[in-house]
Image (tube, rainbow, N blue to C red; front, side, top):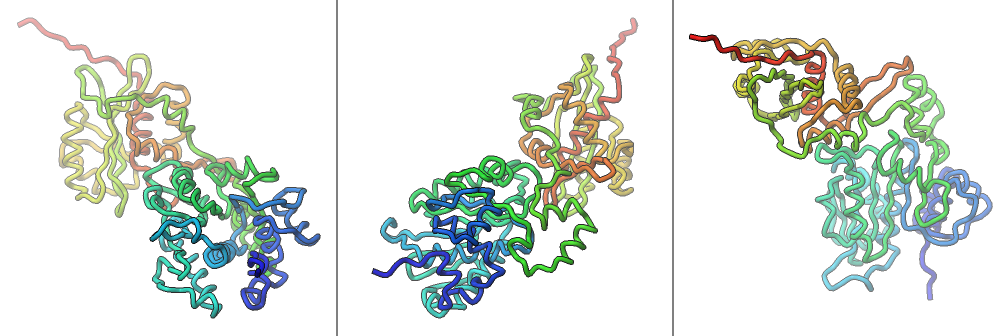
Length: 468
């Protein structure tokens, strides 16, 4: 009986991919992947294994999950493509498949463009080997169907799009950068949906990324499993450890430009200068159960803040709040309009403001003169905020931490607050902003309403009736 092809064979056999992965520059990857599948390691491989995984002992069996915190240009995508080919072509899944069922190796990234990059590497490997190329039955930009009832397919970072598959393996590309306006924890939700799909075939989950902030599933698994024995393997290595051919000058130049970013991107260190803006549990404690919108009440002085749309997918957001006699600030409503005529939104918001007895609205200085002009046309005075975005969030956070705020039960607003990042510069200055590709319109409007209410000690309105 012919011995099964191992991952080491795949990387070293000249008839397979030895020409690409068999050289000295791939030695660390060969040691890591051989150890992941429980192969016996040579002395040289064991040294690589210990340095990359933090484990002293050699592996005794295969692992179920592989978490890679590897620097940029370290060969992660090529290694992931090789693993996809290995699982698809050299592991027989047919005995555990029902009639008509196929085994899927799913490559998931933040978006389809990024996932297709991994698919191009995978396709290139298959087509570079005549024996494996003959297995291809059908191929397009997002999937490769093989003759052995296996499909390699692109997926996107959405828990809705990954259900319903029988997975032989899942490759999560750049998982530290998965972001979504629909969820504050998209990586956790997606992995929870993937694990049952892996159960039938017992395939591996492989997550690879350059490190980023100290939150999310990559950080959680790093904290829990790095250096620890068990089925979950975590590896961490700078770019040049995994790819010695990367020029040192590129790393040096990156360090000169932005040391904090370069330490994460090339040295594979989780960023010390980034942290979550607000604790989700603290935010939940401030949120009322219902209603979403509190109607206007007589003798209550309301204040409002708007975050006008900057174009594209930006929302035009409005928040209305009031301060109670106890000092607590209550956000009565948050709302937004997306991809709607801005002038029409101003008219709608002006009518809403008048329902709450508001004649002045506050907004930032970057919206352009058209905003104040449109509001004034509708009988509402527009005041420019005295705070920039970061100052607004920091002042709001102080009020959040005091517990003197009540927020509406808006899931979208809560997600936007949770997605905010707090960045500390070398000079010690904090800036707060949303990650690239996400939005904070509702959160910004709510924070603005909280802060402008917090600066005033309200004098209750008293209705005086004069005798006739």
